Length: 146
Image (cartoon, rainbow, N blue to C red):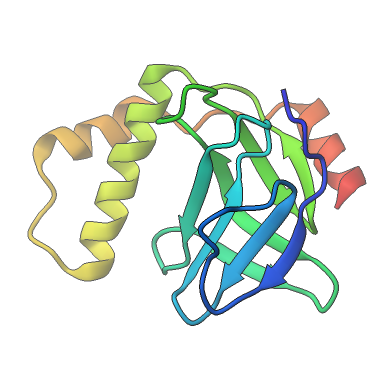
């Protein structure tokens, strides 16, 4: 369940040690975004801004962060999208879906950074599990919000 439905953005050089709930801290100098989990659990969530991780759009008024934030390593396992400062709850993922996404992420990094050929198990996992489908209601909600 999402407690913080809006995140106020603050551009900072350094991410503060204590994160204020409801605030999205953006450090362009260090290429990272941090915030206290939107579910209210208080855990720090850090999203690196790189060509293979998250990217940020600032339209002069609000911040959008893509792709979604999936806190699979936290007890809350919250999953949400940050679009123009609005936090939109997304559906939970199974362990299989999380494993497939991690494999896709490793493969993306390997391709981008030019590392050796992908291990067979990563290529197989990429083909085995398609990305989770987004239902019509979620697409409508995203369209209406942002």
